[in-house]
Length: 505
Ligand code: NAI
Ligand code: DG6
Image (cartoon, rainbow, N blue to C red; front, side, top):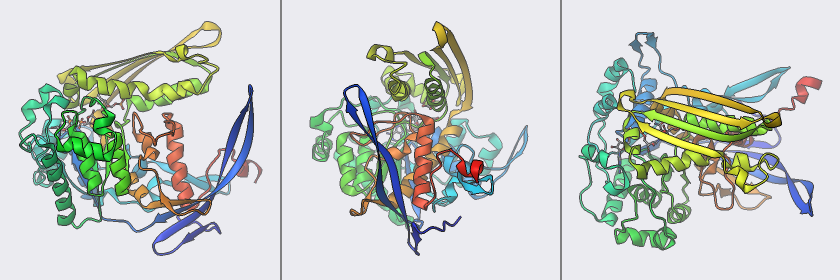
């Protein structure tokens, strides 16, 4: 795709697009709103050179880590496999960047769509070099077998590639994850000195980058859900305090926070795929100083994606959700870890806060704080027999016209990691792309996006936002935000769905 426009320039290294952003400033005058439309000029500059990308996964030997690595290798080497349903080809279904499309315009009256990945130059997932850590020493072929996610025939075909991949020893702070994880922790960096741990992880990153001749590395936490650390401004509040707390091996410094710090100190962006409060203010300051991004929290895969869609539909239709009762049962190691209350509490929070802003936006349905407090219940049960095939059952009860009730009962079954793996890939590819974009507002200096990369919120259950920026959970708004950003950077027109060119030529 090539954009021909006077507002877009391209040379060998950069694509620059000029964009007049239209927004509306609202002033309150007593009980009246005064709306003042305004236009602000932005320039977006995208470095079109594609780097050699390395990714280090924390929890590489888990269900997500093995499924992602194996899935990408299957695509890279076009490995086919057989099941009772026939012969299967590898694909990237479930990946926003690889398998979804964006409307770029109209040809006569026909709408034209292209793959998301083709709008701006992006890393090919098959070119990513993977590495990482796990507290379990299993090589990735055996770990994939343990995970019971991927079809047996594909596991066998991937074995020669995966058995060579062995996770690096990791930091293990048993107090932060469930006690039932202890039996797999045979690949642990010894000692209790958290500063030494940080330095070892930093060296691992530097070595990985150098040995693989990489331009950049991104770290992603896909290890067990930890309990929340007891956040304290004196411990976690600034970069300096955080590093001091690590130096004194403070008990409220989690393993995930050590990884986040190591990433920042090595100049790598860090993504938190689990719900816990890894990205404390001190981490954000470290990232800011290093000029890298942090993003989190908790991958938004199936049940929560649907929830943020359905609730948006109801509230958008003027229907009032009164209760959401969400059950999950699953039998994988994630479920086993979540069977400990402290870890469940982290997950409960991210699964629960995901509709708050959607409800809050509609003061007709929810005029008071009390009414916003709907009956939203999260239940997760560990049932080993179900393996990675997660069952999610949700009942949505809503109030309709004249006090009537509308109830939806939703039953969602899927292999959890087959949804999570392509989503993790998107997080990595988009984070890498956003590292190559700068913008200029009203002819000021070029700057990078804010350190907390809330552009990725479509992929996160509890999206972290820059301070002062409200969180958006609505799935369609989150997707539109991403789609529009890449279109604007490419010099394409944002679609307002009026379709006037189709209606009136
Ligand atoms: P898993 O339990 O299969 O994998 C986690 C891996 O992390 C294990 O291999 C474990 O040994 C390792 N680990 C634990 N502590 C570690 C440490 N300190 N350093 C290095 N490795 C460590 O879990 P799964 O299914 O892969 O999920 C990973 C995370 O992603 C969990 O927190 C889960 O809640 C979260 N998540 C998963 C989703 C999914 O659909 N699979 C969706 C949303 C979030
Ligand atoms: C049970 O809820 C286990 C969790 O790890 C979830 O399966 C995972 O977070 C995915 O949740 P969701 O709501 O995005 O499908």
